[in-house]
Amino acid sequence: MSAERPPVRRRIGVMGGTFDPIHNGHLVAASEVAHRFSLHEVIFVPTGRPWQKVGETDETDGSHAAKHVSPAEDRYLMTVIATASNPRFSVSRVDIDREGDTYTVDTLRDLHAILPDAQLFFITGADALESILSWQNWEELFDLANFVGVSRPGYELSASHLSQHLEKLPPETLQMLEIPALAISSTECRERAAQGRPVWYLVPDGVVQYIAKRRLYRPLRNNSSRVS
Ligand code: ATP
Ligand code: MG
Image 1 (tube, rainbow, N blue to C red):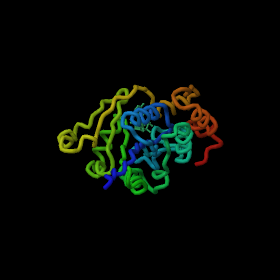
Image 2 (cartoon, protein in one colour):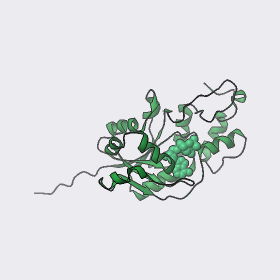
Image 3 (cartoon, helix red, strand yellow):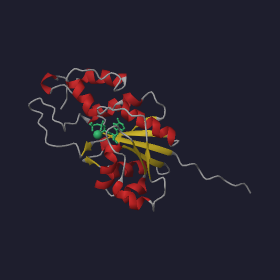
Image 4 (cartoon, rainbow, N blue to C red):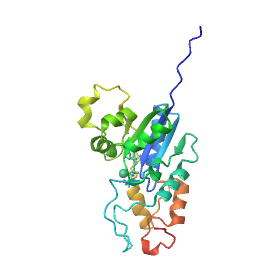
């Protein structure tokens, strides 16, 4: 009688973000987690309407309010461009094709339905970790995926309010990982582009070119090609 090996569950990273624009900090985080956690693939998931970021915006005066978010198709295409050269990276439209605000629990439910046999690892930076786990039902989140919190310059890596629960959960449930520190944010990339300052080497070359071609982040009155 031959002993059959259980099928190996595919280990899939999930990197959620607004990606407005995607930058090298996101890519380094995904690459490092993929390596350290022996992931087969990392799926980048641009948000639809990120509920934390959608606020009162006035697009009529041409100003870019802090909470303005670029069209989902632009953020999706920049994410595709940025990840295209890495055979282990892919991009999912689950969040941008879903109506309404984006919640991590919906992202994970949808990916779980598409990839029922995969073990999901949700990757999140130190700034977003605590809020995801405190604003949403962490018990359900942990049923759907393991979480990997990665370091980010300027933020403390912790999920302090969960510490008493974590001891009772399997060790893979939530892990913290120190990654190469890149002090880059999309906010700063947007500000630089708006002021005509370079974003070269902060974002992949193709994304620099896409931002210029679509005139993203420029004041709207100078932006004739923008579709609202
Ligand atoms: P914004 O300034 O618009 O909030 P951002 O740079 O924070 O943009 P997001 O799209 O909000 O980028 O982040 C997506 C995910 O990537 C989050 O989990 C965030 O914590 C993580 N992340 C972003 N930048 C870095 C970085 N430089 N190092 C580590 N993690 C990062
Ligand atoms: Mg952010």
